[in-house]
Image (cartoon, rainbow, N blue to C red; front, top):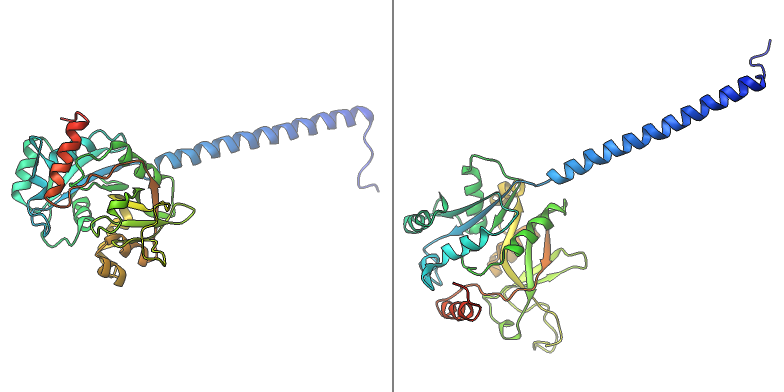
Length: 297
């Protein structure tokens, strides 16, 4: 008995047509499935680290410049000028000032900022951001640490580091650098950075890096200056205070090194920005002069 018998021509044509329909159906179904899968994937990607809060840490008792957040810059406290610039960023869902000082809190509330009171035990701005995050009712995926002593911070830089972190799942931290001016090369208050060829931070230092064997500044080398602004994945920020302090962090007094030494990745973007942070009282006059030149009120 035959297991199968040959088909007649009409049966063969019908079978061919059926097979063709099945193949087309499978292909169409696969295309639809791919489209649905892609849509779902892109949907997830769009939602990745999408909720963003900007936090401006501010403390009164700075060793180098006590009361720095409240210093007057052309008629407004510096903290207000930083807050006003941050408000222009498109990626921030909310902005708060985190402080342990009542005078700063009262000042900020006076010009309309949301304020979160933090403890005096915070060792740095990152820990102050973490404490603030825990006190916020709404949950956020990304926290941007906006330095209160950058009254001319560009909103595009804020948006840039947020987008960099959103686009780099293996990084837990992002920050920005710009070109280092030769006159700042040996200033320990100007933090330098070196980056690998994929845009991840290798090291930060108060000294000049890289440092050549001649021991002089090479005017042809593109040294990078770290801009203080940085953003964190909120899950990482919660564990940051529990990470052990590291030798390089303590020696350089740079919190970014704690992240790198503990094996985490940090994404770095390069921007065209003249750094105008206020590290010392004499920087205030420089800022005011620049603002007058650029007609910034």
